Length: 560
Ligand code: ADA
Image (tube, rainbow, N blue to C red; front, side):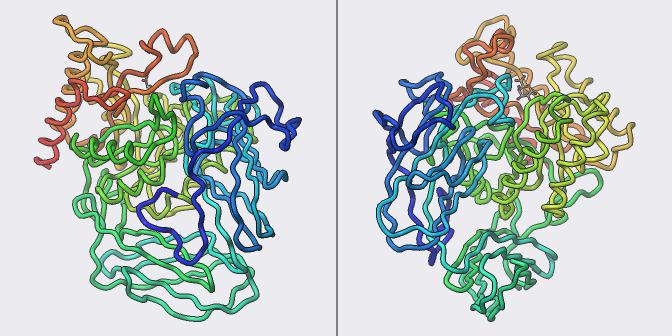
């Protein structure tokens, strides 16, 4: 997996990135596909988005990917997929071993016993909308690219293996940390060691039982804490029997204090952007160089915050944010789901699975300071409240240590704000209604409404605000769609928020332009088939607004 450190030293791991055989099967029904007779006449990069390549641009349907991999030693093996869009079925030498629905999250496919030799791995990938992919809907305001978009790995597992680690800072002053290790392979007695920064912290023998979990608490005297201004990180290596797993941790606590988010007790004002994982040439696949460049630009802009809109971001992006001290709102997939879906138990179950996967892979990133769900869904309709309760409740169950939120676009009628720790508002004054001059009053009105409705104790974030600007389009009238209009609108927003105290976070919509859906009603407001509200264009070239925001963000951060 593309990460900033090796997850395993002992476990045999093979990176399956490269060029795989490829066939576009179009309308074919996956149930009827004979895996042994697929005509693989083309090739495709893994990771990659097949429909971002010129030959398959805009194609929707079933695709097949194939690679051959050498199994050195017989035994249990695991394929790890960091993300496949949107539905897939994985075959191991012709046998289906896993179906998975939903892009943007990691999942695994296990083979209990693989013989040594060469194995053929085939993945049927479907980027159609419909029953197989309930979470991805065609009308969303982004283009759903298809393919094996993030890295794939083959791992060899022994008789005992670590499923995952979760590390929590219990006490900042005492540098006390709780670790829980999920494992498989009960009924054995094995050595268990924990190292942090190369120093042994725990060393014992454990009896593995049916609980599948080891829980320990230890202190790390004197280690540096993680904070946005001092993002100190420590490598934590756990060894269990013949297996091991590494995570990079930061010691820090996120709390809500006096209506603000705080890290280690220090109140934060969040100045940030929303970020989509989309690129004209790579689709949802994000080459390492692109992730590095995005983080460089986020820092250069003066941000200390990014909202991962509207789905879990690449694990390498989170690593880079950990290092840069950029706070992240990690969000599960959603875009204006209707009440009809949010009251459908099967749909909510699919959302819950996706939330589980998001939390499992991002839990140990210190940069992730809050979780979010259900972007702009009908939180004002009483019928959907149970879905908000369930999803936010699941986040709290999985992680009692981070605040939870959702971005509301119904703030004046919202019926779920009591369920969130942080109130987050998407609003577009000066774009979808009113003019630039109306913005300060509207932001104040939102703040007054939130306080009056009983949430004055919660942090308040403007999670989206912005304007479209066609790159390079400038004129002396400074009309809508010009770079001048966008720059002036964002200057007004940042200028106003920097001069008040109640709203303590802002994520501008959006860092970079990105391709949107083909739905016509949307395209009439999306010149070039692109959502043009980026302060960068889709190739990350700065618009006029970039300079304006950069100047104001830097000034605001210096003065607080
Ligand atoms: C919403 C939505 C974004 C985007 C934005 C826009 O706030 O959450 O994904 O669609 O509107 O550009 O209009």
